[in-house]
Image (tube, rainbow, N blue to C red; front, side):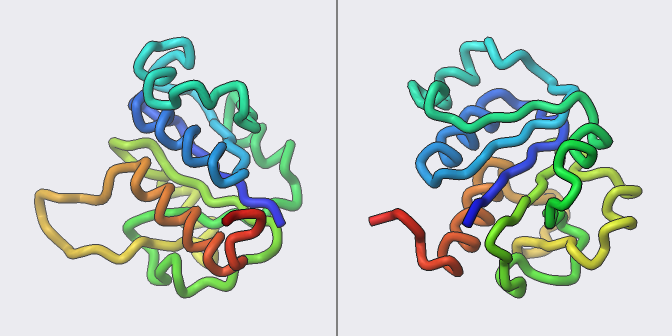
Length: 156
């Protein structure tokens, strides 16, 4: 069983640091598709990820196309507030990728339209000025739903 988190063009270093820490502690691979809105050398990224960076299974891609090319058989679920299915409505495969879009815009519409059958959402109230959850919180919710379904492999 292998879980992969994919961040598409992340913009906020603290979120990426927190996500990296979640990935380490859950044995999840972190994939980042650029461009990013910051450098991985920034203090905020390192601070949020604490001293976990050397433990992280991390892969970087210059574009979405490169990600698809290097992961040709990946079963990707696309997290978006626009999906019909909740993240908990899915029965996750033994190897799964969950993609999250950048903080200010999410995943581009053209990618979502090409992948409607694997778009998922985290249920939340529809509040006009509160668009969605924080990215690192959303990733944690998604990761732990998959792990719950897998009965928390290797965890105590």
